[in-house]
Image (cartoon, rainbow, N blue to C red; front, side, top):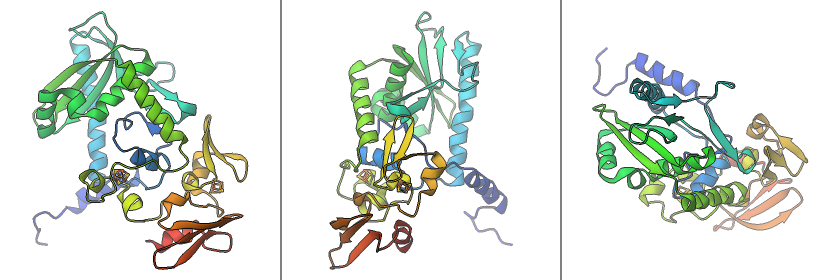
Length: 318
Ligand code: SF4
Ligand code: SF4
């Protein structure tokens, strides 16, 4: 068979497929690694499982590369005499935190003593990998400007871990050059980030997005673009149902007065009713177990009793 340039070999494709087969679905909590993102609506959509995350096998492998690099960073630091604690020896898990009933959470790369620039100060550790272009920007402008998401993540982690300094260590994936920056705790920014997390977690409706223009470059790259700008009904699960609320330690169904496990939330039930903003029409009437929507062309659709199930609505949009 003649190989066309750009074709992927079946073996490489099988490797990518294996990554996709093993991928995890929705994240149970709002992650501290994302809290620095500008669009609160995007964060809310993620927390409410509106769009199934879809990463290609190549991307999933790239994430794994980043994780593997962490071990190397730790070895590098230890080799120059830095004391590194990267997991809790009792639980054998990474150190981390949760807040707001367990709905805001994160895991840290580690904590260190003996960083040569300030050997007596405990530092939070954060490791990142960069491509060449972004690495040059990082060297020029520092973490806060080049990567505000990383900056917010580090600021939040420092607060929850009770540390006043962080040691941010990044590698250029093309050249293996290293960049480090010591970052100071910032209590004011921490408070803003925590308020933001609380707002997103307890909002029962989507917050305003960063742009009403689908052509805005950030919207073009957003995973939730279809739900946000193109009227695509959100995924059907308990988090997109108007009967669900986040409570301490989990989720609660107000219709059946019961807690919902991760699995139950994923499967939902046949009484699912969309949070109204997650369908494209305008609410024109409501009743027991149903909500009716009107569209510009005069079409009316009832979601729930006497009308269409959420699943039917979702399927008809595919
Ligand atoms: S498409 Fe734009 S406005 Fe909508 S959630 Fe994404 S970033 Fe926010
Ligand atoms: S009514 Fe059904 S879909 Fe809605 S929260 Fe309760 S169990 Fe989930």
